[in-house]
Image 1 (tube, rainbow over the protein chains, first blue to last red):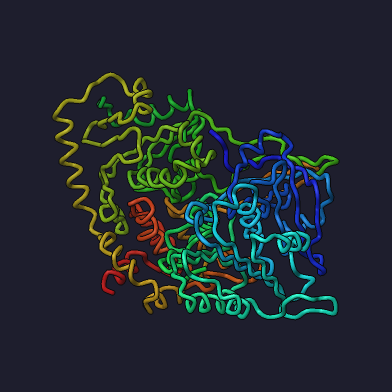
Image 2: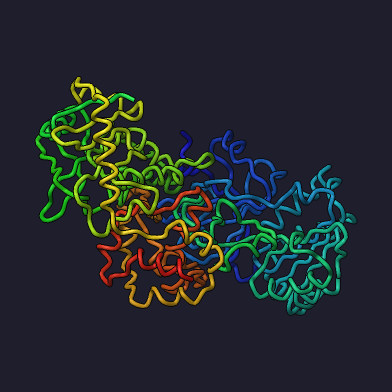
Length: 279
Length: 340
Protein backbone atom coordinates (compact mmCIF):
# COMPACT_ATOMS: atom_id res chain seq x y z
CA UNK A 1 0.00 0.00 0.00
CA UNK A 2 1.38 3.39 -1.04
CA UNK A 3 1.48 5.62 2.03
CA UNK A 4 0.26 9.04 0.88
CA UNK A 5 1.74 10.76 3.94
CA UNK A 6 5.35 9.93 3.07
CA UNK A 7 6.99 12.77 1.10
CA UNK A 8 9.28 12.29 -1.87
CA UNK A 9 12.82 13.39 -1.05
CA UNK A 10 13.76 16.53 -3.00
CA UNK A 11 16.71 18.90 -3.17
CA UNK A 12 16.32 22.66 -3.21
CA UNK A 13 17.98 23.20 -6.57
CA UNK A 14 17.45 26.91 -7.11
CA UNK A 15 15.95 29.79 -5.16
CA UNK A 16 14.74 32.89 -6.96
CA UNK A 17 13.77 35.97 -4.97
CA UNK A 18 10.72 37.23 -6.84
CA UNK A 19 9.88 40.56 -5.21
CA UNK A 20 11.61 43.65 -3.85
CA UNK A 21 10.30 42.94 -0.37
CA UNK A 22 12.16 39.59 -0.57
CA UNK A 23 9.35 37.74 1.17
CA UNK A 24 8.23 35.84 -1.92
CA UNK A 25 10.64 33.35 -3.43
CA UNK A 26 10.37 30.65 -6.04
CA UNK A 27 11.86 27.32 -4.98
CA UNK A 28 12.91 24.87 -7.66
CA UNK A 29 13.07 21.29 -6.42
CA UNK A 30 14.75 18.31 -8.02
CA UNK A 31 13.76 14.80 -7.05
CA UNK A 32 16.48 12.86 -5.27
CA UNK A 33 15.24 9.67 -6.95
CA UNK A 34 14.73 10.45 -10.65
CA UNK A 35 11.88 7.93 -10.90
CA UNK A 36 9.86 10.01 -8.43
CA UNK A 37 9.46 12.71 -11.06
CA UNK A 38 7.25 10.34 -13.08
CA UNK A 39 5.21 9.57 -9.97
CA UNK A 40 4.79 13.30 -9.41
CA UNK A 41 3.03 13.76 -12.77
CA UNK A 42 0.83 16.80 -12.19
CA UNK A 43 -1.60 19.06 -13.99
CA UNK A 44 -1.61 22.88 -13.69
CA UNK A 45 -3.79 23.97 -10.77
CA UNK A 46 -2.75 21.15 -8.44
CA UNK A 47 -0.79 21.72 -5.26
CA UNK A 48 1.82 19.96 -3.17
CA UNK A 49 2.66 19.72 0.50
CA UNK A 50 6.11 21.16 1.10
CA UNK A 51 7.49 19.07 3.90
CA UNK A 52 10.28 20.36 6.13
CA UNK A 53 11.14 17.72 8.69
CA UNK A 54 11.10 19.20 12.13
CA UNK A 55 8.89 22.12 11.10
CA UNK A 56 5.90 20.62 9.35
CA UNK A 57 4.12 20.89 6.04
CA UNK A 58 2.59 23.66 4.00
CA UNK A 59 0.17 23.26 1.07
CA UNK A 60 1.34 25.37 -1.89
CA UNK A 61 0.13 25.57 -5.49
CA UNK A 62 2.51 24.24 -8.12
CA UNK A 63 3.97 27.17 -10.04
CA UNK A 64 5.82 25.29 -12.75
CA UNK A 65 4.16 23.60 -15.69
CA UNK A 66 4.38 19.85 -16.34
CA UNK A 67 5.97 20.81 -19.67
CA UNK A 68 9.01 21.98 -17.69
CA UNK A 69 10.91 18.75 -17.18
CA UNK A 70 13.45 17.86 -14.54
CA UNK A 71 12.12 19.95 -11.70
CA UNK A 72 9.02 21.33 -10.00
CA UNK A 73 8.62 24.89 -8.74
CA UNK A 74 6.67 26.53 -5.97
CA UNK A 75 6.42 30.24 -5.30
CA UNK A 76 6.07 30.78 -1.58
CA UNK A 77 5.39 33.79 0.59
CA UNK A 78 7.12 33.84 3.96
CA UNK A 79 4.27 33.71 6.46
CA UNK A 80 4.13 30.89 9.00
CA UNK A 81 6.47 28.39 10.62
CA UNK A 82 7.07 26.19 7.59
CA UNK A 83 7.31 28.92 4.96
CA UNK A 84 9.66 30.92 7.19
CA UNK A 85 11.92 27.88 7.55
CA UNK A 86 11.77 27.40 3.79
CA UNK A 87 12.84 30.99 3.21
CA UNK A 88 15.90 30.37 5.41
CA UNK A 89 16.97 27.40 3.31
CA UNK A 90 19.97 27.29 1.05
CA UNK A 91 20.32 25.66 -2.33
CA UNK A 92 21.38 22.05 -1.93
CA UNK A 93 19.26 21.41 1.15
CA UNK A 94 17.15 18.26 1.23
CA UNK A 95 13.50 18.26 2.19
CA UNK A 96 10.25 16.51 1.29
CA UNK A 97 7.43 16.99 -1.17
CA UNK A 98 4.02 15.34 -1.17
CA UNK A 99 1.45 15.27 -3.91
CA UNK A 100 0.44 16.22 -6.46
CA UNK A 101 -2.79 16.94 -4.62
CA UNK A 102 -6.23 18.24 -5.45
CA UNK A 103 -8.02 18.59 -8.76
CA UNK A 104 -6.60 20.93 -11.39
CA UNK A 105 -7.54 23.62 -13.84
CA UNK A 106 -10.11 21.90 -16.07
CA UNK A 107 -7.86 21.50 -19.13
CA UNK A 108 -10.36 19.45 -21.14
CA UNK A 109 -13.04 22.05 -20.54
CA UNK A 110 -10.63 24.85 -21.49
CA UNK A 111 -9.56 23.22 -24.73
CA UNK A 112 -10.83 24.89 -27.89
CA UNK A 113 -11.98 27.94 -25.94
CA UNK A 114 -10.70 31.49 -25.62
CA UNK A 115 -9.01 31.78 -22.27
CA UNK A 116 -8.99 34.88 -20.09
CA UNK A 117 -6.60 34.68 -17.17
CA UNK A 118 -6.93 37.21 -14.39
CA UNK A 119 -4.42 37.22 -11.56
CA UNK A 120 -3.77 39.53 -8.67
CA UNK A 121 -0.63 39.76 -6.57
CA UNK A 122 0.79 36.59 -5.17
CA UNK A 123 -2.10 34.42 -6.39
CA UNK A 124 -0.60 34.24 -9.86
CA UNK A 125 1.40 31.06 -9.27
CA UNK A 126 -0.88 28.30 -10.56
CA UNK A 127 -2.06 30.66 -13.32
CA UNK A 128 1.57 30.90 -14.42
CA UNK A 129 1.62 27.11 -14.52
CA UNK A 130 -1.46 27.14 -16.73
CA UNK A 131 -0.09 29.81 -19.08
CA UNK A 132 3.21 28.02 -19.52
CA UNK A 133 1.33 24.80 -20.18
CA UNK A 134 -0.97 26.34 -22.78
CA UNK A 135 1.78 28.11 -24.72
CA UNK A 136 4.18 25.17 -24.77
CA UNK A 137 4.84 23.87 -28.29
CA UNK A 138 1.85 22.26 -29.93
CA UNK A 139 -0.30 22.78 -26.83
CA UNK A 140 -0.90 26.35 -28.03
CA UNK A 141 -3.06 25.05 -30.91
CA UNK A 142 -5.47 23.41 -28.49
CA UNK A 143 -6.60 26.76 -27.09
CA UNK A 144 -8.13 29.85 -28.70
CA UNK A 145 -7.11 33.40 -27.87
CA UNK A 146 -5.29 33.72 -24.58
CA UNK A 147 -5.69 37.01 -22.73
CA UNK A 148 -3.79 37.57 -19.49
CA UNK A 149 -4.55 40.38 -17.06
CA UNK A 150 -2.12 40.40 -14.18
CA UNK A 151 -1.76 43.06 -11.53
CA UNK A 152 0.31 43.77 -8.45
CA UNK A 153 0.38 46.65 -6.03
CA UNK A 154 3.66 48.01 -7.42
CA UNK A 155 6.22 46.96 -10.01
CA UNK A 156 8.49 45.44 -7.38
CA UNK A 157 5.76 42.99 -6.37
CA UNK A 158 5.23 41.47 -9.81
CA UNK A 159 6.20 37.81 -9.95
CA UNK A 160 8.07 36.13 -12.82
CA UNK A 161 9.29 39.44 -14.29
CA UNK A 162 11.54 37.83 -16.93
CA UNK A 163 8.75 35.56 -18.08
CA UNK A 164 6.33 38.46 -18.36
CA UNK A 165 8.75 40.15 -20.76
CA UNK A 166 9.12 36.97 -22.82
CA UNK A 167 5.36 36.46 -22.96
CA UNK A 168 4.85 40.03 -24.14
CA UNK A 169 7.09 39.33 -27.13
CA UNK A 170 4.77 36.57 -28.38
CA UNK A 171 2.10 37.47 -30.90
CA UNK A 172 -0.18 34.61 -29.82
CA UNK A 173 -0.69 36.01 -26.33
CA UNK A 174 -2.45 39.16 -25.18
CA UNK A 175 -0.60 40.15 -22.01
CA UNK A 176 -1.82 43.04 -19.88
CA UNK A 177 0.33 43.74 -16.85
CA UNK A 178 -0.80 46.44 -14.49
CA UNK A 179 0.26 47.89 -11.15
CA UNK A 180 -1.86 49.81 -8.69
CA UNK A 181 0.83 52.45 -8.58
CA UNK A 182 3.96 52.67 -10.72
CA UNK A 183 7.37 54.04 -9.84
CA UNK A 184 9.98 56.18 -11.63
CA UNK A 185 11.02 53.37 -13.94
CA UNK A 186 7.59 51.86 -14.63
CA UNK A 187 6.48 52.38 -18.21
CA UNK A 188 3.57 49.99 -18.15
CA UNK A 189 -0.06 50.27 -17.27
CA UNK A 190 -1.37 51.65 -14.00
CA UNK A 191 -4.74 50.74 -12.55
CA UNK A 192 -6.55 48.14 -10.51
CA UNK A 193 -7.23 44.73 -12.02
CA UNK A 194 -11.04 45.16 -12.23
CA UNK A 195 -10.63 48.45 -14.12
CA UNK A 196 -8.16 46.89 -16.54
CA UNK A 197 -10.54 43.97 -17.09
CA UNK A 198 -13.22 46.45 -18.01
CA UNK A 199 -10.87 48.21 -20.41
CA UNK A 200 -9.58 45.03 -22.05
CA UNK A 201 -13.19 43.80 -22.15
CA UNK A 202 -12.55 40.22 -23.27
CA UNK A 203 -15.40 38.75 -25.30
CA UNK A 204 -17.60 36.16 -23.65
CA UNK A 205 -17.87 34.23 -26.92
CA UNK A 206 -16.60 30.70 -26.42
CA UNK A 207 -14.57 32.06 -23.51
CA UNK A 208 -13.65 30.96 -19.99
CA UNK A 209 -12.23 33.29 -17.35
CA UNK A 210 -9.79 31.84 -14.84
CA UNK A 211 -9.54 34.23 -11.92
CA UNK A 212 -7.22 34.10 -8.89
CA UNK A 213 -6.39 36.87 -6.51
CA UNK A 214 -6.99 38.44 -3.14
CA UNK A 215 -10.66 38.52 -2.02
CA UNK A 216 -10.97 42.25 -2.66
CA UNK A 217 -9.82 41.84 -6.25
CA UNK A 218 -12.19 38.94 -6.83
CA UNK A 219 -15.07 40.90 -5.32
CA UNK A 220 -14.66 43.79 -7.79
CA UNK A 221 -13.59 41.72 -10.79
CA UNK A 222 -16.53 39.31 -10.86
CA UNK A 223 -19.14 42.03 -11.60
CA UNK A 224 -17.04 43.13 -14.58
CA UNK A 225 -17.19 39.63 -16.02
CA UNK A 226 -20.89 39.28 -15.31
CA UNK A 227 -21.41 42.53 -17.19
CA UNK A 228 -19.37 41.18 -20.08
CA UNK A 229 -21.82 38.28 -20.17
CA UNK A 230 -19.69 35.50 -18.71
CA UNK A 231 -21.76 32.80 -17.04
CA UNK A 232 -20.90 31.31 -13.66
CA UNK A 233 -20.07 28.03 -15.37
CA UNK A 234 -17.41 29.86 -17.38
CA UNK A 235 -15.67 31.57 -14.47
CA UNK A 236 -13.16 29.34 -12.69
CA UNK A 237 -11.26 30.02 -9.49
CA UNK A 238 -9.19 28.28 -6.85
CA UNK A 239 -9.75 28.23 -3.09
CA UNK A 240 -7.29 28.23 -0.23
CA UNK A 241 -7.95 26.79 3.21
CA UNK A 242 -5.89 25.64 6.13
CA UNK A 243 -4.87 22.05 5.40
CA UNK A 244 -2.91 19.27 7.00
CA UNK A 245 -3.37 15.88 5.33
CA UNK A 246 -4.18 17.14 1.84
CA UNK A 247 -6.18 14.00 1.07
CA UNK A 248 -9.61 14.66 2.56
CA UNK A 249 -9.25 13.04 5.95
CA UNK A 250 -8.06 15.41 8.67
CA UNK A 251 -11.25 17.49 8.57
CA UNK A 252 -10.16 21.14 8.34
CA UNK A 253 -10.64 22.30 4.78
CA UNK A 254 -14.16 21.15 4.04
CA UNK A 255 -16.64 23.66 2.69
CA UNK A 256 -19.89 21.85 3.22
CA UNK A 257 -19.53 18.33 1.85
CA UNK A 258 -16.54 19.20 -0.34
CA UNK A 259 -12.94 19.05 0.78
CA UNK A 260 -10.92 21.84 -0.81
CA UNK A 261 -7.82 19.62 -0.75
CA UNK A 262 -9.43 16.67 -2.51
CA UNK A 263 -12.49 17.93 -4.39
CA UNK A 264 -10.87 21.34 -5.07
CA UNK A 265 -9.01 23.62 -4.94
CA UNK A 266 -10.41 24.51 -8.38
CA UNK A 267 -14.13 25.25 -8.60
CA UNK A 268 -16.29 27.08 -11.12
CA UNK A 269 -18.33 29.94 -9.76
CA UNK A 270 -21.42 27.82 -10.41
CA UNK A 271 -19.95 25.09 -8.21
CA UNK A 272 -18.96 27.59 -5.52
CA UNK A 273 -22.52 28.89 -5.46
CA UNK A 274 -23.69 25.42 -4.45
CA UNK A 275 -21.23 25.29 -1.55
CA UNK A 276 -21.90 26.82 1.81
CA UNK A 277 -20.19 30.23 2.09
CA UNK A 278 -17.71 29.05 4.71
CA UNK A 279 -14.26 29.75 3.26
CA UNK B 1 -22.03 -18.47 8.59
CA UNK B 2 -20.39 -20.61 11.23
CA UNK B 3 -22.20 -20.45 14.59
CA UNK B 4 -21.15 -21.90 17.91
CA UNK B 5 -22.27 -21.92 21.50
CA UNK B 6 -20.02 -21.27 24.47
CA UNK B 7 -20.81 -21.36 28.14
CA UNK B 8 -21.28 -17.91 29.58
CA UNK B 9 -18.56 -18.24 32.16
CA UNK B 10 -16.06 -19.35 29.50
CA UNK B 11 -15.74 -15.84 28.06
CA UNK B 12 -12.92 -14.50 30.21
CA UNK B 13 -10.97 -17.73 29.72
CA UNK B 14 -11.26 -17.39 25.95
CA UNK B 15 -10.01 -13.82 26.06
CA UNK B 16 -7.08 -14.90 28.22
CA UNK B 17 -6.26 -17.80 25.94
CA UNK B 18 -6.22 -15.44 22.95
CA UNK B 19 -4.01 -13.06 24.90
CA UNK B 20 -1.44 -15.84 25.07
CA UNK B 21 -1.22 -15.88 21.27
CA UNK B 22 -2.21 -12.39 20.13
CA UNK B 23 -2.38 -8.81 21.30
CA UNK B 24 -5.82 -8.62 22.89
CA UNK B 25 -7.52 -5.31 23.58
CA UNK B 26 -10.14 -6.04 26.20
CA UNK B 27 -12.31 -4.06 28.57
CA UNK B 28 -10.49 -3.59 31.86
CA UNK B 29 -11.61 -1.86 35.00
CA UNK B 30 -9.59 1.27 35.80
CA UNK B 31 -10.82 2.98 38.94
CA UNK B 32 -14.47 3.73 38.16
CA UNK B 33 -14.11 3.40 34.42
CA UNK B 34 -14.03 0.58 31.94
CA UNK B 35 -11.47 1.12 29.20
CA UNK B 36 -10.13 -0.94 26.31
CA UNK B 37 -6.48 -1.74 26.92
CA UNK B 38 -3.99 -4.39 25.84
CA UNK B 39 -4.79 -7.16 28.29
CA UNK B 40 -1.49 -8.97 28.59
CA UNK B 41 -1.16 -12.63 29.54
CA UNK B 42 -2.10 -12.11 33.17
CA UNK B 43 -4.72 -9.44 32.63
CA UNK B 44 -8.29 -9.82 33.79
CA UNK B 45 -10.99 -8.73 31.35
CA UNK B 46 -14.09 -7.12 32.79
CA UNK B 47 -17.24 -7.88 30.84
CA UNK B 48 -19.92 -6.65 33.26
CA UNK B 49 -20.16 -3.22 31.71
CA UNK B 50 -22.73 -1.37 29.63
CA UNK B 51 -20.14 0.48 27.60
CA UNK B 52 -16.56 1.61 27.94
CA UNK B 53 -15.83 5.14 29.05
CA UNK B 54 -13.87 5.94 25.89
CA UNK B 55 -14.73 4.82 22.40
CA UNK B 56 -12.31 2.11 21.26
CA UNK B 57 -11.44 4.02 18.08
CA UNK B 58 -7.94 4.57 19.48
CA UNK B 59 -7.11 0.95 18.60
CA UNK B 60 -7.16 1.94 14.92
CA UNK B 61 -6.70 5.68 15.26
CA UNK B 62 -4.57 6.33 18.37
CA UNK B 63 -4.69 9.62 20.25
CA UNK B 64 -1.12 10.11 19.10
CA UNK B 65 0.89 8.01 16.70
CA UNK B 66 4.23 8.26 14.98
CA UNK B 67 3.94 8.53 11.19
CA UNK B 68 7.61 8.71 10.26
CA UNK B 69 11.00 9.51 11.67
CA UNK B 70 13.67 11.82 10.38
CA UNK B 71 17.20 12.72 11.22
CA UNK B 72 19.59 15.65 10.84
CA UNK B 73 22.31 15.44 8.17
CA UNK B 74 24.65 18.07 6.71
CA UNK B 75 22.09 18.47 3.89
CA UNK B 76 19.21 19.10 6.26
CA UNK B 77 16.65 16.99 8.05
CA UNK B 78 15.99 13.88 6.00
CA UNK B 79 13.44 11.11 6.19
CA UNK B 80 14.71 8.02 7.97
CA UNK B 81 11.83 5.59 8.41
CA UNK B 82 8.13 5.04 8.01
CA UNK B 83 6.48 4.14 11.30
CA UNK B 84 3.57 1.90 10.58
CA UNK B 85 3.71 -1.32 12.48
CA UNK B 86 0.86 -3.20 14.03
CA UNK B 87 0.61 -6.58 15.69
CA UNK B 88 -2.01 -9.19 14.93
CA UNK B 89 -4.66 -8.16 17.40
CA UNK B 90 -8.10 -8.87 18.70
CA UNK B 91 -10.41 -6.19 19.94
CA UNK B 92 -12.45 -8.24 22.35
CA UNK B 93 -15.86 -7.21 23.55
CA UNK B 94 -16.78 -3.92 21.95
CA UNK B 95 -20.40 -2.94 21.85
CA UNK B 96 -22.30 -3.02 18.54
CA UNK B 97 -22.46 0.79 18.41
CA UNK B 98 -18.68 1.02 18.56
CA UNK B 99 -18.25 -1.78 16.02
CA UNK B 100 -20.60 0.19 13.77
CA UNK B 101 -18.27 3.19 14.11
CA UNK B 102 -15.45 1.19 12.52
CA UNK B 103 -17.58 0.54 9.45
CA UNK B 104 -18.20 4.30 9.27
CA UNK B 105 -14.52 5.21 9.72
CA UNK B 106 -13.58 2.69 7.00
CA UNK B 107 -15.53 4.79 4.52
CA UNK B 108 -13.27 7.76 5.19
CA UNK B 109 -9.88 6.18 5.81
CA UNK B 110 -10.15 3.42 3.21
CA UNK B 111 -11.31 5.31 0.15
CA UNK B 112 -10.48 4.23 -3.34
CA UNK B 113 -8.06 7.02 -4.13
CA UNK B 114 -6.40 7.96 -0.87
CA UNK B 115 -5.83 5.13 1.54
CA UNK B 116 -4.79 5.99 5.07
CA UNK B 117 -1.97 3.49 5.55
CA UNK B 118 -1.86 3.87 9.35
CA UNK B 119 -5.54 3.19 9.96
CA UNK B 120 -5.84 0.46 7.36
CA UNK B 121 -2.84 -1.54 8.60
CA UNK B 122 -4.23 -1.67 12.12
CA UNK B 123 -7.73 -2.40 10.91
CA UNK B 124 -6.54 -5.27 8.70
CA UNK B 125 -4.50 -6.79 11.49
CA UNK B 126 -7.29 -6.64 14.05
CA UNK B 127 -10.26 -8.93 14.50
CA UNK B 128 -13.24 -7.21 16.09
CA UNK B 129 -15.31 -9.24 18.51
CA UNK B 130 -18.52 -7.49 19.48
CA UNK B 131 -20.72 -8.40 22.43
CA UNK B 132 -24.38 -7.59 21.92
CA UNK B 133 -26.14 -5.37 24.45
CA UNK B 134 -28.82 -7.43 26.13
CA UNK B 135 -28.95 -5.67 29.50
CA UNK B 136 -31.07 -2.57 30.05
CA UNK B 137 -29.22 0.22 28.22
CA UNK B 138 -28.12 3.65 29.35
CA UNK B 139 -30.88 6.25 29.14
CA UNK B 140 -28.61 8.05 26.65
CA UNK B 141 -28.34 5.14 24.21
CA UNK B 142 -30.01 5.86 20.86
CA UNK B 143 -28.37 3.44 18.41
CA UNK B 144 -31.69 2.41 16.90
CA UNK B 145 -32.17 5.94 15.54
CA UNK B 146 -28.90 5.89 13.61
CA UNK B 147 -28.99 2.59 11.71
CA UNK B 148 -27.71 0.55 14.62
CA UNK B 149 -29.16 -1.89 17.13
CA UNK B 150 -28.18 -3.37 20.50
CA UNK B 151 -27.77 -6.75 18.81
CA UNK B 152 -25.99 -6.02 15.52
CA UNK B 153 -22.78 -7.02 13.82
CA UNK B 154 -21.96 -4.16 11.43
CA UNK B 155 -18.23 -3.53 11.64
CA UNK B 156 -17.58 -6.68 13.68
CA UNK B 157 -15.96 -9.96 12.64
CA UNK B 158 -17.53 -11.99 15.42
CA UNK B 159 -20.72 -11.27 17.35
CA UNK B 160 -21.37 -12.76 20.77
CA UNK B 161 -24.94 -12.66 22.07
CA UNK B 162 -25.92 -13.70 25.58
CA UNK B 163 -28.89 -16.00 25.02
CA UNK B 164 -29.29 -17.18 28.60
CA UNK B 165 -26.83 -19.76 29.84
CA UNK B 166 -24.74 -19.54 26.67
CA UNK B 167 -23.25 -17.05 24.32
CA UNK B 168 -24.21 -17.53 20.69
CA UNK B 169 -21.00 -17.04 18.73
CA UNK B 170 -21.44 -15.88 15.13
CA UNK B 171 -18.27 -15.98 13.05
CA UNK B 172 -19.32 -13.37 10.53
CA UNK B 173 -16.28 -12.66 8.39
CA UNK B 174 -13.39 -14.84 7.17
CA UNK B 175 -11.24 -12.93 9.65
CA UNK B 176 -13.63 -13.97 12.40
CA UNK B 177 -13.63 -17.60 11.22
CA UNK B 178 -9.89 -17.73 11.69
CA UNK B 179 -10.45 -17.49 15.45
CA UNK B 180 -12.97 -20.35 15.44
CA UNK B 181 -10.63 -22.63 17.38
CA UNK B 182 -10.97 -20.49 20.50
CA UNK B 183 -14.75 -21.01 20.67
CA UNK B 184 -14.96 -24.77 21.21
CA UNK B 185 -16.91 -27.08 18.92
CA UNK B 186 -20.48 -26.85 20.18
CA UNK B 187 -22.46 -25.95 17.05
CA UNK B 188 -25.39 -23.62 17.55
CA UNK B 189 -28.82 -24.97 16.62
CA UNK B 190 -31.86 -23.21 15.16
CA UNK B 191 -33.25 -22.73 18.66
CA UNK B 192 -30.28 -20.54 19.53
CA UNK B 193 -31.02 -18.37 16.50
CA UNK B 194 -34.64 -18.02 17.49
CA UNK B 195 -33.65 -17.12 21.03
CA UNK B 196 -31.19 -14.54 19.72
CA UNK B 197 -33.84 -12.94 17.52
CA UNK B 198 -36.24 -12.70 20.46
CA UNK B 199 -33.56 -11.12 22.61
CA UNK B 200 -32.58 -8.71 19.81
CA UNK B 201 -36.16 -7.54 19.41
CA UNK B 202 -36.50 -6.97 23.15
CA UNK B 203 -33.17 -5.18 23.36
CA UNK B 204 -34.17 -2.84 20.54
CA UNK B 205 -37.44 -2.09 22.30
CA UNK B 206 -35.51 -1.23 25.43
CA UNK B 207 -33.81 1.67 23.63
CA UNK B 208 -36.25 4.41 24.58
CA UNK B 209 -34.25 7.42 23.47
CA UNK B 210 -35.03 8.22 19.85
CA UNK B 211 -33.96 11.05 17.57
CA UNK B 212 -35.14 11.98 14.06
CA UNK B 213 -31.63 11.51 12.63
CA UNK B 214 -32.72 10.66 9.10
CA UNK B 215 -35.44 13.27 8.96
CA UNK B 216 -33.05 16.18 9.51
CA UNK B 217 -30.95 15.65 6.38
CA UNK B 218 -33.27 17.51 3.96
CA UNK B 219 -33.75 20.20 6.62
CA UNK B 220 -30.00 20.66 7.04
CA UNK B 221 -29.66 20.86 3.24
CA UNK B 222 -31.66 24.04 3.32
CA UNK B 223 -30.82 25.64 6.64
CA UNK B 224 -27.17 26.57 6.69
CA UNK B 225 -28.07 30.16 7.50
CA UNK B 226 -30.96 29.51 9.86
CA UNK B 227 -30.83 31.65 13.05
CA UNK B 228 -31.22 28.35 14.90
CA UNK B 229 -27.44 27.96 14.76
CA UNK B 230 -27.16 30.90 17.17
CA UNK B 231 -28.90 28.89 19.86
CA UNK B 232 -26.62 25.90 20.52
CA UNK B 233 -23.15 27.17 21.22
CA UNK B 234 -23.80 29.83 23.88
CA UNK B 235 -22.70 27.63 26.74
CA UNK B 236 -20.13 25.56 24.81
CA UNK B 237 -16.68 25.73 26.42
CA UNK B 238 -14.92 24.54 23.25
CA UNK B 239 -13.32 21.81 25.34
CA UNK B 240 -13.58 19.27 22.55
CA UNK B 241 -14.65 16.47 24.90
CA UNK B 242 -17.57 15.53 22.64
CA UNK B 243 -15.23 14.98 19.71
CA UNK B 244 -12.69 13.04 21.75
CA UNK B 245 -15.35 10.75 23.20
CA UNK B 246 -17.07 10.27 19.85
CA UNK B 247 -16.44 6.93 18.15
CA UNK B 248 -16.73 8.45 14.67
CA UNK B 249 -14.94 11.80 15.08
CA UNK B 250 -11.69 11.51 13.20
CA UNK B 251 -10.21 14.99 12.74
CA UNK B 252 -6.49 15.07 13.30
CA UNK B 253 -3.44 17.27 13.41
CA UNK B 254 0.00 16.49 12.03
CA UNK B 255 3.01 17.94 13.82
CA UNK B 256 6.75 17.46 14.06
CA UNK B 257 8.80 16.95 17.19
CA UNK B 258 12.57 17.15 17.33
CA UNK B 259 14.96 16.07 20.06
CA UNK B 260 18.61 16.60 19.31
CA UNK B 261 19.30 15.28 15.83
CA UNK B 262 16.26 13.07 15.60
CA UNK B 263 12.66 13.85 15.06
CA UNK B 264 9.29 12.28 14.55
CA UNK B 265 6.22 13.36 12.64
CA UNK B 266 3.14 12.50 14.65
CA UNK B 267 -0.53 12.70 14.16
CA UNK B 268 -2.84 13.35 17.05
CA UNK B 269 -6.54 13.81 17.55
CA UNK B 270 -7.73 17.30 16.83
CA UNK B 271 -11.18 18.81 17.15
CA UNK B 272 -13.45 20.96 15.01
CA UNK B 273 -14.53 22.53 18.31
CA UNK B 274 -11.17 24.29 18.70
CA UNK B 275 -10.81 27.89 17.47
CA UNK B 276 -7.35 27.22 15.99
CA UNK B 277 -8.50 24.21 14.01
CA UNK B 278 -9.25 26.16 10.83
CA UNK B 279 -7.37 29.38 11.56
CA UNK B 280 -5.13 30.35 8.69
CA UNK B 281 -1.69 31.98 8.81
CA UNK B 282 -3.20 35.21 7.50
CA UNK B 283 -5.46 35.37 10.55
CA UNK B 284 -8.57 34.54 8.55
CA UNK B 285 -10.74 31.84 10.10
CA UNK B 286 -13.54 30.36 8.00
CA UNK B 287 -15.21 29.02 11.15
CA UNK B 288 -14.68 32.09 13.22
CA UNK B 289 -16.87 31.43 16.25
CA UNK B 290 -18.23 28.50 18.22
CA UNK B 291 -21.47 28.90 16.29
CA UNK B 292 -19.79 27.90 13.04
CA UNK B 293 -17.97 25.08 14.81
CA UNK B 294 -21.17 23.63 16.22
CA UNK B 295 -22.81 23.92 12.83
CA UNK B 296 -19.83 22.10 11.32
CA UNK B 297 -19.99 19.28 13.87
CA UNK B 298 -23.73 18.81 13.48
CA UNK B 299 -23.65 19.14 9.70
CA UNK B 300 -20.69 16.79 9.40
CA UNK B 301 -22.50 14.04 11.25
CA UNK B 302 -26.01 14.39 9.86
CA UNK B 303 -25.52 15.97 6.42
CA UNK B 304 -21.95 16.05 5.04
CA UNK B 305 -21.19 12.41 5.85
CA UNK B 306 -24.53 11.44 4.33
CA UNK B 307 -23.67 13.45 1.19
CA UNK B 308 -20.25 11.84 0.97
CA UNK B 309 -20.86 8.27 2.07
CA UNK B 310 -24.61 7.87 2.38
CA UNK B 311 -24.24 7.19 6.12
CA UNK B 312 -24.88 9.17 9.28
CA UNK B 313 -21.65 9.71 11.23
CA UNK B 314 -23.21 8.97 14.61
CA UNK B 315 -23.71 5.59 16.21
CA UNK B 316 -25.93 6.67 19.08
CA UNK B 317 -23.54 5.66 21.87
CA UNK B 318 -24.49 8.73 23.89
CA UNK B 319 -20.94 9.41 25.11
CA UNK B 320 -21.03 13.06 24.01
CA UNK B 321 -24.31 13.50 25.87
CA UNK B 322 -22.89 11.98 29.05
CA UNK B 323 -19.56 13.77 28.89
CA UNK B 324 -20.44 17.32 27.92
CA UNK B 325 -19.57 19.50 30.93
CA UNK B 326 -22.34 21.98 30.08
CA UNK B 327 -24.98 19.44 29.08
CA UNK B 328 -25.28 20.18 25.40
CA UNK B 329 -27.26 17.22 24.11
CA UNK B 330 -26.91 16.25 20.46
CA UNK B 331 -30.28 14.52 20.71
CA UNK B 332 -31.96 17.82 21.52
CA UNK B 333 -30.01 19.57 18.76
CA UNK B 334 -31.28 17.05 16.21
CA UNK B 335 -34.78 17.17 17.66
CA UNK B 336 -34.80 20.97 17.37
CA UNK B 337 -33.52 20.85 13.80
CA UNK B 338 -36.34 18.49 12.87
CA UNK B 339 -38.80 21.20 13.87
CA UNK B 340 -37.22 23.97 11.75
